[in-house]
Image (cartoon, rainbow, N blue to C red):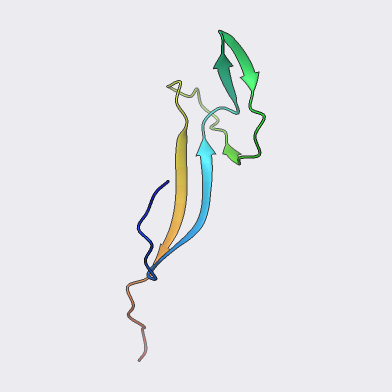
Length: 65
């Protein structure tokens, strides 16, 4: 995940979305890395995983001032 460094943007979390295994040489293999996975409860429709990142974006305006 690439994003432009900016004081108004703060990255909270990133997680890989998809099955926690991959196909290697025509065999299903459990991932061996330490990445966090969010495994969907439905059938994943592709051979590719996704990256889900959560950011906080500040507009610089404060309420009540």
